[in-house]
Length: 406
Length: 92
Image (tube, rainbow over all chains, first blue to last red; front, side):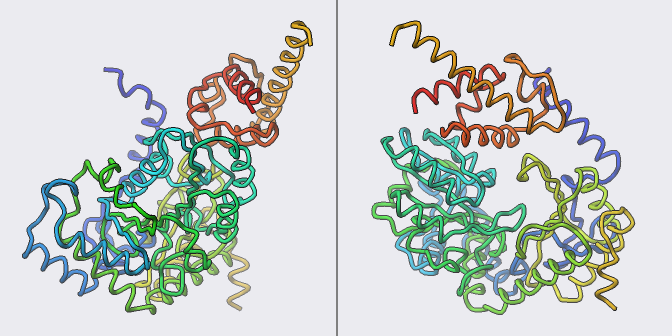
């Protein structure tokens, strides 16, 4: 049957990667040893691409909470949030998130992807206008297709372009909803949120900020970019995920908006999927407590991020525009990205390959993400492996590093 | 304005839109390619979905219009794009 014929060209590329025995999109972790190490292909491998920002996946309090919740409440809810799938734990976690953000309402979704789908599709209805940052995550684009609003994208991180587009819509009826992210997952850059907030105020738009990669990373108490930029009051909805700093799976939204409870019965991605199992909910609540109680995790994370960023910069790699826990090296071609990725893995370092159209401006990226759980020695070891393999492939210029070492 | 004059003005506008789209696209392509109204943007030019949206953004700036994503999704050929942009420009 020819239903898959449309993927022929892509399938050929995928086959090539499989045959080369180095497919970055199909890596199996045979055994995970800790937040920073796993066995891959029989080899102990340093993990530098798992978005485990605070390193809480093996935290004793988090693991214990999961175990206790499974024993007490069972392995799964076998139901959706609006039927039989809302337990006390779901409500407690929603209250804990609302408390952390100082907002009236918290809502828990089954994945971060669904949180974006659920909030965006419910806020932007027929006749409304959605304005997305051009570099938005796939879940934001997909959410925009799930609703019936008119969707346009503005230039990445350009408050001026957003203003231009809101001006064009000035006399159009319908609500204007703007979506930006805290830290962008591909290049690790942050949004100019203060400036976006000013534009939002000027045009009376609704502002949604996805803090998936900035929760636990930025801000005085780890609430994210909105906190760091001092514009939380302008951010009508904060959306985020449990699968990065909070070491589980799931997504959430918090808001102060009057009447937002109605979203529970209009947001289809909230309503028509199974709710998170008790273990995951309890572990996430425990991880949130750790995030709040241990600001040292955030400090260590950002020190590691800066260490890796500066290290790769010294090696001559072209990186994203600012240091953050996402550190991406811009590769000349997808082949170079595959080559470096495979060489690093062979040397015992796991990273990610990111390719267009998932990346901005057609860039091929060798993407790393650091954790608070990495020791400075592990980061230095990773940099040394980048130096060795990158030099061998002609991708890194080792001279500046040697000069710096002297 | 007579009917003929209106028609002429519309033709001028279509030509202007066409020139801007073709010129912008030529500048964005890695090498010069023959372009026509029948050129299929994704299949013939090898652009991915994000590259198409980025290229449309250039046109939006030049003509001071916004092209909604569902309208871009409907476009297959350069001729379709000229017609879509022309309609939006007239409505603006």
